[in-house]
Image 1 (cartoon, rainbow, N blue to C red):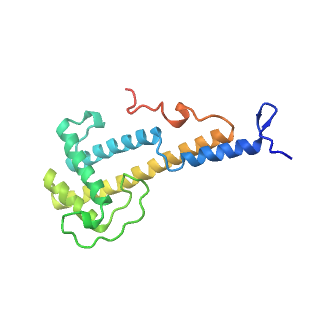
Image 2: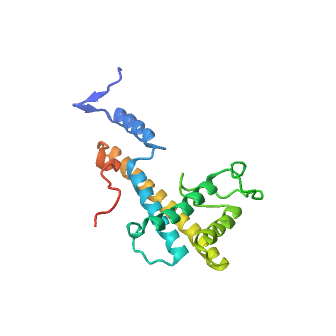
Image 3: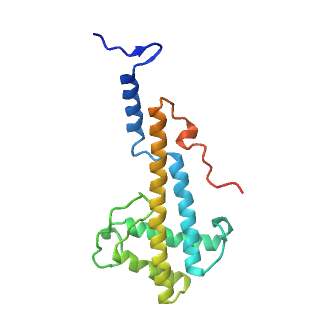
Length: 190
């Protein structure tokens, strides 16, 4: 019998299933706008966390930070992300051999760091914010925990979005701008 592609004005279930799996396969490994926007929100929250931990500041939001406050906290976070992601051979700080951290949950946000990176962070905080040894260690520990939490929440957000998209395709619905997250705005409206 010839392969029947159409039945009663629509695709046969086998063909629909083939298209659905093709769509799902194309989505795997692709970061869609909703995830990128969510990552930006998490990074801004981490910058605010770095600032609060290093200064004891009580600003309620990232947008309330002044330029220098944002720049200083962003510099610490950016360097922390870079150091945690860079192989030892590329880091020119003469650290001892790095121990391999656990696998990362997110491509950007460090969810796990090795011991030498954990020792590096308090040094940076002390230098930039003139913190005591104890305050720098406490702030660094809090930042590492917060980075892990942010990475895990971002992964959960991504997985939830993928489940919604898969369910949408299983139900025979198209993926549109809204369902792909193209309608998500970068900052919540006040």
